[in-house]
Image (cartoon, rainbow, N blue to C red; front, side, top):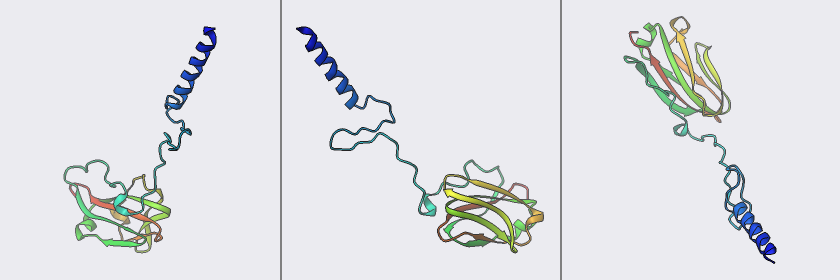
Amino acid sequence: MKLPLLAASLSALVLVSACSGGAHPRATATHGATGVSTTPAPEQTPTSPDRLPNPVQSSLPVGSKTLYTGSGHGSGGVTLPASAGKASSITARWTCAGPSKFNIVTSGKPLASSQCGNGIAVFTAEIPHAKMHELTWKFSAPDSVIWRIVVTQPPGN
């Protein structure tokens, strides 16, 4: 008669293992009153520019000059210093979040553009001197788009 006791003990062991979270790490626990889930929460799209990642992911080359750092939503712009007009190139690094594009435009001509999405991507555009028709840049995006941008001048320019 020890066999039914052994079977009952094994059944209880299996039940305890299944409810203790010993299942696959991505499994969802559905027992108990807490509704605990071990599934990681999806990344949420940032809702303000200060929640976006820093567009300068790595350190800039020694001697680089930061010309502009800014953030906002929708349209914006900047007038770069006169030294930018003499540089062989200017680098723009930005990140944005929203359902549309972020555009950098000068004199009505596009300099760079990206689709925004969830705000985890960082975009880089090196803008050669020949494309800089004026030092006033406009940032064009719908109000639903948030952004952060850093504009730098390489060393020796």
